[in-house]
Image (cartoon, rainbow, N blue to C red; front, side, top):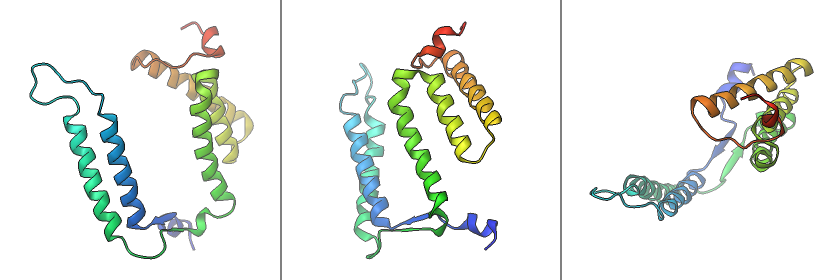
Length: 164
């Protein structure tokens, strides 16, 4: 099998029952998230109107998919994700969860640099380019989000010594 043929194969194939269940739960989550949206004075439709339409549509489509899905196996894993490749994919998800848990304590720049550097090394990059890329990208993202987009990021030790 050539690399191109391997890229055309779905890594994991889910039954429509699984996809429908996720859509149903996602629709419920959207509806639950809109319960505390405030009404806009003088407007016919409040801020929760369109998200609720999307939530209900997701729930309806998810219910149909879950009920009409083919019987049998719920998901099938591609051979591409077995062994070391599967562990690398798992490492990405674990890294994201760890980033979410650690960023409030360590700050955005340090946590992002460690995540990018660690995943680069895991992917086979050399140490010096991985560290340089991780540091540069985390600083660039910090500047972009903080100053261009004005998104407040969690501060840490690195942010306290930077001049900006």
